[in-house]
Image (cartoon, rainbow over all chains, first blue to last red):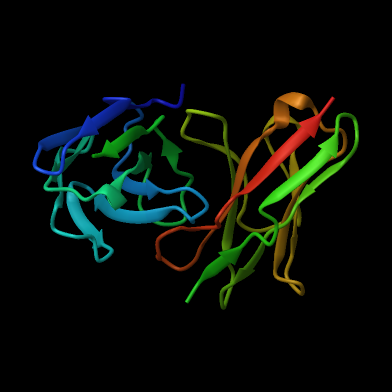
Length: 113
Length: 112
């Protein structure tokens, strides 16, 4: 148990659905991250929040919308996704942004039909 | 730009034998280097990191890694592999307030 939880663990959605992924960290960290993990590809950093402020948005399509209401919670809102968005979505946190060890949640396995 | 490469998609070793999982990086200056492990249906778990100091870093579960600046490498090693070490291993590099870059991962299989 790393202190980072993610819900749901599995999600199947159609291309017209709207859903949200939730991440919560119990470590008192100030930075939180969303990553996309696809088979045989490096982890793709999607978004970074540092002290609740978004600091990174690595050319992520607008059908992914992050929200960070406080330092402990991070959401990823999904709408009109494409089948190629099917992947494992990982949340992570660290004490502060950059060069710090990141602690990962178990991920949400997303399948878009 | 910083980057990291894991040249092997797959590494197979017999239980009890030493294992090495390779990682090379490309970054100017002094990087922070990390190794993470991912077991099936789990997120990544931190194993060890190099910041400065002794080039040999010891981490969790008996793993260690050696920082080699001249070869820009940070290979992960263990003297005696266990079947339970079978997992996906990721090398990562971070430098100078930039976000962490992960390699594509190496799948380690340890056979009894």
